Image 1 (cartoon, one colour):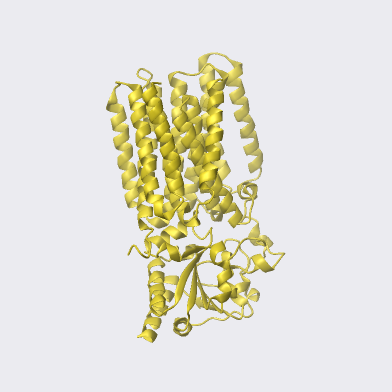
Image 2: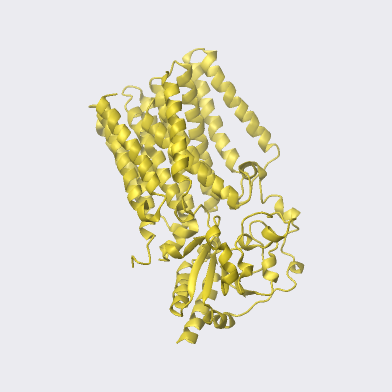
Length: 95
Length: 466
């Protein structure tokens, strides 16, 4: 099986997992879910790390470095702001 | 890839899935978010392990710079500006994925058809997400008109651009030619994709932004997954797919709440033609039997109320009246009333936005009810208090088959014994149609700024109770 085909297998199955676990999300949590998921999409940081190491290729390294900064902002900012929001969801009992 | 790295990636993927699952319950959400960030950390560690000893200067510089910017943004942002923040982050995520693909392109290049297709797809989706999110940000921030901006032939231009994308991809894969030519194709592709992102979002009205942000959220995930295809990295594919799915679900929920199809939101330009079709809706003749009252009179009815349902809309956040609303609710509760909030899915500027705004004012989340939970309780309620909401409480959606919003799920405020609407004037909401609720016998208008009215109402109520 070609790497592309394996990738498509993994992608399709993960989409189904995603649908299954998120279908019943209560509306209260829509915004934190979105910003949390948003932070997860910063996983592209992995790609950025790899591609910031093209050594001699200057253009590629600059592109990789920009990708790294973008993705890190996405990851760090996304997780922190999600936590900030979730901290506010208190119960009556919690007070 | 060494076995140990592969195993860490697997653990990371599992943590992402579990973290996302925990985000779907209030009790576990915070831990879920931490688990996801742990997963991210693991993935980064595994990647660094795999890369071995390299020059870390650039990497550290990039991570420190990015973390600082992210930290400042996350700490500083106002909760009312969450939609803008998410829009920006979506754009950065998409942009990063496109940059990764481009970097691979200039670094190693690709010599297989599979590799080229995923590379171009990654650039395409990443760039569309990037500029589309920037436009969405501009619209939310008010830097770009919230009205749909439509020029003649808009969709034909989009179609031509889309065809050009296919042609470029085809030419660069099978056309061959010297590397300079192929490089030029890629640069043109970047340009077209960036332009497409702008053109796809700019015709969409400000009221539809919740759908657009959800969809761009999904795109940013798909872009990450595509970068995963380019690098043959499963953890990118899996987490990208999860985000893609979650964004798509939220998109569906938002579309359903607005009673529109996704195609209609994306290409309908709602709000551009509607005012003309509905005759403006600002006509005084639309409201022959509207009644208003003062906060003082309202306070007397509130004093005797046992069951109060508050219906907040985005106008509440604009007036910065969340905190005074909570104070009023507390006084009503002290007086023995059962107070709940009925939250329409599109009450804020993004999915669940209103819940976050109320949570920020310390409203316990048990009091926040969604549409399905509470809609049958209005008939038993003494008071429905509508704050800065309009279209989502329009009875026409349930009762008037000819109304443009017929079939849209609305909160049945008019079934309560008394309904109070706090509003500056009788001007229409986003749908630009008159709201028949204002004519109802049991409805009273409280004209004025929400914060001012509620402060007076609260004051009068306290006087009555003391």
